[in-house]
Amino acid sequence: MPEPHGEGKNQNPQAIADAQIDAGVMRLLPSSWLPYARLARLDRPIGTWLLFLPCFWGLSMASADLHSYPPASHIILFALGALIMRGAGCTLNDIADHDIDAKVARTANRPLPSGQVSLWQAWAFMIFQCLLGLLILLQFNLYTIWLGVASLVLVASYPFMKRVTWWPQFFLGLTFNWGALMGYSALTGGLSAAALALYGAGIFWTLGYDTIYAHQDREDDALVGVKSSALRLGKYSKLAISGFYLAMLALLSLAGFFGQLSYLFYIGMVVTAWHLAMQLYQLDIDRPDICLRLFRSNRDTGIIVSASILLGTF
Image (cartoon, rainbow, N blue to C red):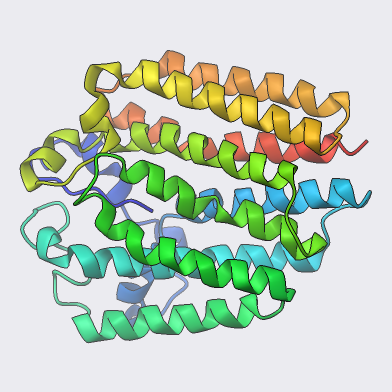
């Protein structure tokens, strides 16, 4: 997941809400494991949800094509894979940004800049997570394995995109929604127009929710020298996010058409549209606390879409 870099908002407790530790998870781990758990963002499960849900979309769409339901074994494998590979991506993100994080009060206590974990330990931990991810990937068919290998190009390049483009959120969308393709191919051994439409819908979804997220940090990103869609769009962000969400809904509907889903799927799309409209209605890009809450509410968006696809099989 994207990690904010900030100095100017340090004094605003609303702005650091995303940095708070979820003690419910951390209490279960030995103290020596805690820095690594923080590197993997185990204390912030929203990123795992947003990585897993497109995988479930793909599984569900493939199951509809096969007139069945997603097998529990595949759901578990993708859930574990999302947890592990999200952790690996966040670890790489911290490795790439450790020089910036060390200069920023709000991020200076992270495991790398604070010295709780050395750079080589972070690299070793990331490699360990990638090896675990590989073990999971090898449980799938050959087509899906190669799709997973191809995704590493996106995973490795994303942390550096905010240094070279105003649209790192687009590259996050390419990365985070790759699971829609893998979920579909894991059951079918290939791809279809429905799977590609799901992938496109996920990209626009991520553009929307991560632009909301990035507004928590736009002033600080400008000071540090990194780029984001929030900075690029500025006061036009709400209009642009509306467009991103409309494109998401259009591509989801197209996926339903290609997948020959029933009318129940389109009822779910109405619910999805209402949920996204409520996000836009409540959005205030100058309120970091609201931006964080609305960003997190996209877990519910993904669940609604998942339920819609499953209902569409009836």
